[in-house]
Image (tube, rainbow, N blue to C red; front, side, top):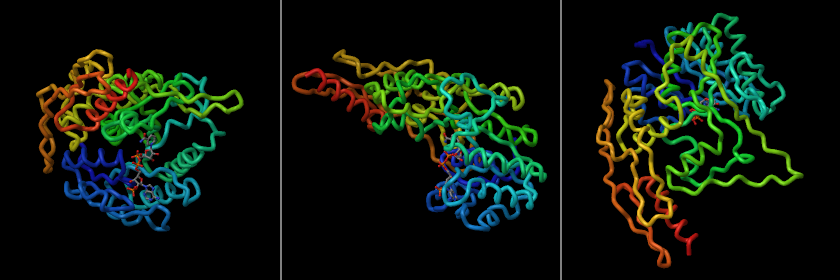
Length: 389
Ligand SMILES: NC(=O)c1ccc[n+]([C@@H]2O[C@H](COP(=O)([O-])OP(=O)(O)OC[C@H]3O[C@@H](n4cnc5c(N)ncnc54)[C@H](OP(=O)(O)O)[C@@H]3O)[C@@H](O)[C@H]2O)c1
């Protein structure tokens, strides 16, 4: 188990999950944000929270003081206030001067550019040098080469789309702001947030200096396949794909299939969520209070078991619908945290709600606590009935 201190520069979606896992393992954790109040929960769990605005000249000195044995995870996206690469160059220089042990950079697998015909991609595939959107990431990786040459133990993780509770397609579908791009015929690789946390930890322990890894799960899916699967599971109508007129340019898409062989072979990573099926089941378990989000993961095996229970969509046209969602399970996971963390909330009881629109009736099974998914099911039922009348 890792015991060295962890510094997370830019503690957002990924950083918070990583910090929780490290705190649960008893590690000293330092995190940065522009708004320390946003990380009050982590502070309460024992993290040291430091305010950092990357565009300031000596911004990285305070969070890196006294970090000679630490691992630093750089998790700040490129931003417009500084020329590309400058913030990362400053951070890595500060880390080098302070004798930081590992410097792990969270980069992007979008570097392969907008090349729809490009199929499987691995670390040997040439990146696209003419993709303006991704240019800052390329610049940042260039800065890391300099830092490596200067003696810093750097590791680059080129991430696929990261999903998990509170982030990803599920959230956007529930918010009604997700659409297919160009018919959704392109592949997208993803990685579940808890697997990413484990991969970062494995990279700390085993990645050689200068290594680069593509970070993705085993099963890239067509955008439309994943969206259709999730819509059915959530009881939502399938999302549209806006028409592209003949005179319009096709929208850019950086979807492709990422190979994760190097990750597994060199770092010994075993994914808990090899595809979105297991990953989405974990999110549902977490939403239902069955999984522990504080420790950065669910108990081994639990999410996988949940994933074998298919959910029957509530948007079918039968007058009654059933749900076999994860909230029917009664096996809560336990936290391995040594830090105080809230107890898991019990699973919500399911109730049948009858929806009636102009004489058309549908019964929907929802959790008594009416979470986002339940509300979405009810809205979908109303929509379906309106469509019928
Ligand atoms: N999530 C993904 O799907 C994905 C995929 C590929 C690559 N990545 C890369 O992984 C990294 C982390 O992703 P994430 O999803 O965790 O991002 P996130 O939730 O947006 O968090 C980003 C963090 O960076 C901090 N930050 C942003 N601008 C800053 C600035 N000017 N000065 C100081 N701090 C600043 C934010 O601070 P505040 O707390 O003040 O907002 C936040 O803590 C990013 O570099 C991203 O490009 C993510």
